[in-house]
Image 1 (cartoon, one colour):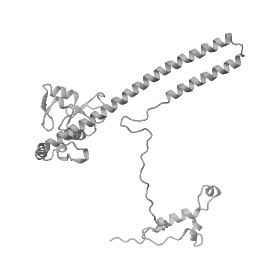
Image 2 (cartoon, helix red, strand yellow; image 1 turned 180 degrees about the horizontal axis):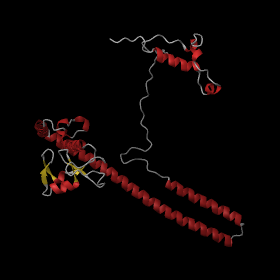
Image 3 (tube, helix red, strand yellow; image 1 turned 135 degrees about the vertical axis):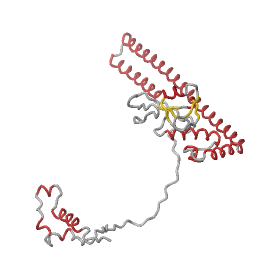
Length: 294
């Protein structure tokens, strides 16, 4: 969006990197400074289409094409009344300013005729949203409880490590066993404590907030095998509008290679052969010789 500019003051993103383009319900853009200047009283008219606008309806342009921003806002508004998905209704007329009066009349008529259904759908959507929020809150609570549990376990592990270390020092002072045996016992207890700590860190929840188990795979229907015939190669036929080019094996017998430079050992090592270059040259020479203009 660096090449876009305000249609009123002509300020570009290059000249002002902090430029913010705002778009309203009409789909025409203005920069933030022009919006503050023209709509100081809270309302005004669009500079391009003279549509009455309100200052609080201006929003930051998200898409490169402001018409898309306009369509998104219209879809949000219509969605609240129709309670349908994007693929269930068309907004071409409202987005492109085609037959606006008739289109808005149809919307108002639909809203009046389906008032009860719209209200029921709103309640249904509200319930689903509440259930989702409850599931998210429950997941947050479980994560917090797990965090506190891990914190307590880590503190306990630290206490156990310090206790194990102190016991090792006390045994070195009082025990009659060799230091190597005491050291091996101390290392064994330390390894056990480390393994317990790793088990706690690797503990993960089994379900998402939606109730779906992690790692769960949905069984799908097997792909049906279709019996088909084996592939048979069909040579490519190219229409050149000219005489038939001799086969590459016949070029030497028919004398075409007499005027072609023989391939050197270095050429042969690289995959070059004289007959291949001669064959391609003949294809170019014979192509189009029989073509007649109509």
